[in-house]
Image (cartoon, rainbow, N blue to C red):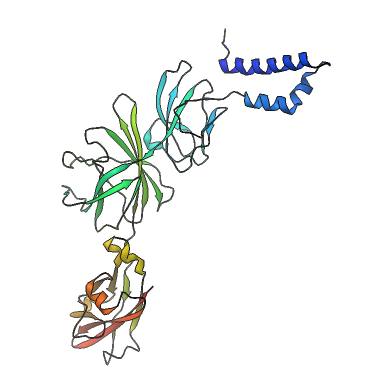
Length: 365
């Protein structure tokens, strides 16, 4: 014979007890229809509805409902340990972006509906969001061709997130000592910006990294991604559940000019003019690349020499076909080219004894 769930028995008893109490207290009998339409009775029944079990160690603020748990944070990632009627653990699962439980970490997502659904009312669920990864890490901007070389990296102290300047090559991140190199971890990346709806994917540790390092390869410039990290001791239990958001900045878009022929190098009526815009706030970000704007020449290969100068061609700022103008440079500061206002520098190229030039207008705010 099929047993009734304890929750069903409890709910039925509540309704019967309330009805019996009201009938005993009232002078006149009460029919079932009138009883069920009473607002106070409806409230009592609603509160006693069948619902899932929510473990006491779950994150605060979550709400147990019929076959679901609601009030999750749509910006977080969740791990759920499932317990049966006898409170025996059935293992750890994760919440997908669709709000269902999945077995694999690489299916995890931020719950758009702020709930996890399709749950068993007879089960109890321990629901916890990933905590921010904190501590020290080191990132490397290096060639990703084997064998990988990890020379001097850039250390950073993190509290759940970090910003990395645009790389010259490929980016790698050593998660030690924020993570323990002697422990076992699984890592999944979830892009959240550029693209904004990327699919989660496994992130393997770099096998050729030196001992004592836990190195993963990051996305390239302009991408922001969450790296969800689960520590697994091999038994199926998850000992820690962390997340790190990494934003890789976009490199500055180069400004291009075309050198055109002039009769007089000082007569710029018919030369190409390109505009560079620079915000002085970038001088105080602490990221050197923020102060640099590349300026290129579209027809550079046809010139035997190119100089860049402010007001004196005999004392150029730079010689060469592509100029990474560094607004933090001492010479630029000395000339006042990083002060608020509009400034002009001239680019002059020589081919077969004929001079060509262009003007770069610099707007500093």
